[in-house]
Amino acid sequence: KTQLEGAMKTRFVVGAIAVLMAALIAPADVDAQITLGLKGGANFSDLSNVADQWETASETSFVGGAYALIGFGGKFGIQPELLYSQRSSSLSFSGESGKLTTTYFEVPLLLNYRLLTGLIEPQIYAGGSASFETECKIDPSDSTPEDGCDVIADWETNSTLWAGIVGAAVDLDLGIFEFGVDARYNYGFTDIVPSGTDSPEGRWRYWSIMGQVGIAIGR
Image (tube, rainbow, N blue to C red; front, side, top):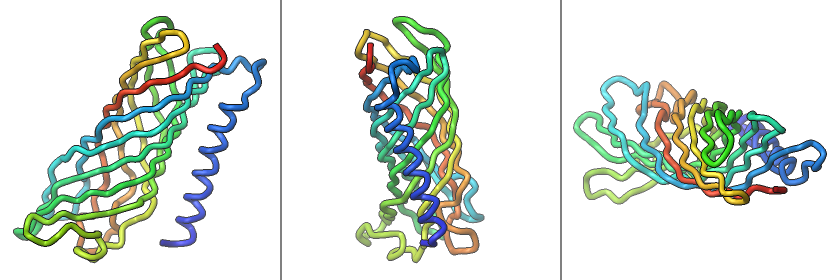
């Protein structure tokens, strides 16, 4: 992993933490409307833009973590998140097949717009994310035990992936508590393995569906 990747990772994480801290210490006279919460659900992931002769199929995996929604007196808000995100895809190449699973700490930063306010609050949002790999495994279809991508396939995966996000959510506002459902599409910009290697070279592009519960601060 390069020093540049490490520096980018550090700066992005520090920036996201700074936004979260700003949400917690925002002064009351700014009229900030803050919601802190947890969310969890499933990724329905597949690899796109794969190299020739590779075939893939979608798999389901877990995603979940914490979020903050910082609204500034109107319908717009900033929504930073910190997620534990698994992404999986079935792979086949030259008669061999298996299941690829990669795990990341993902840091999305989103611009949120509430279409309506009241008991039921539909929202749309868009933004970007950085994902920092913690594990990459391949589960072959034969008797070979599951092992790391670097062991089974000799892949040196990219440690940091960048993606764009668009999505929508609906919250049920019960005063201090909010319950909701969140659906988003994640459009990966970075190959999981650098091009020019004997690998699928694909990018994660996938749907995520999560339930969420939040607590409104300062109401």
